[in-house]
Length: 297
Image (cartoon, rainbow, N blue to C red; front, top):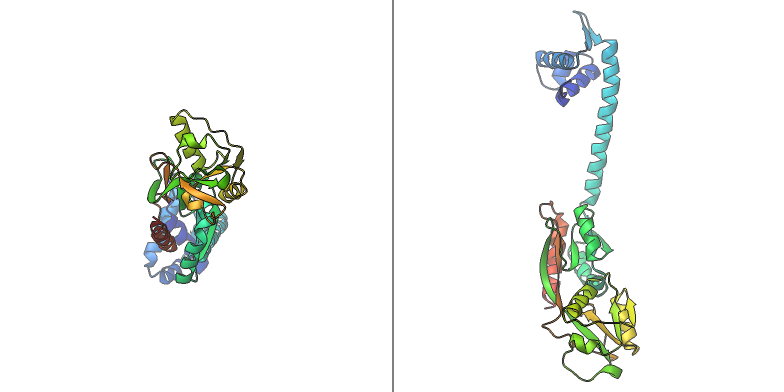
């Protein structure tokens, strides 16, 4: 059997529910002959007589009754599904869902969202703190509008827009501070270290730099959060290495020293899926991220 034209089924339902071909034609602003022709086309496609036609009446055959009961239920399910999606879209008009790197969320996100809420008071932003790798999967599944965080080797179907260059810095307690203006990887290797764990983009960058110089870094402490690493450094337990954007309220317990600029930096930016139709609020929030991060340069 060839594919059934949905319009033929809709005409069939209209004819049954209106009580006659003539009334169905009137309701749909068509000629009765057009209704009759479409019913006949449907009968020929499915090989079933749907109506008993006489001069006095037009009524369903037993087979026509079976088809009506089945099709009307299916059409009802389709309408309910469409209504459900329409309701979700209506509720989503003021709601967007984004992902953010934890280091950025802890230091810059609050001010950016406060600005956004002030400009768009009816908006609702759901923020998920995840690693860049987890964000890639979420964007590909269209679970989030965009990701804001460090660059990564993104798949070909995604696009990274760099906004802020974010170099690595060392937070040096007084006990280990020789007063140098910058530190190299070889300098770090001589001191007790507090590093982010290997799931973080900053640690991956530091490990690549160390490997390129054939230097092995053996941290005494490995932590998941930048603020934890900074608190351990403030306690004098070692030098912590963090991206500059994640370092807040470091003084006076530690001195923030850049890692040799030729050795370590990364980019912070927006990761999106080209081709997806963006939410209007999403584009506005991206603009605020761009302005806020660019101002940090």
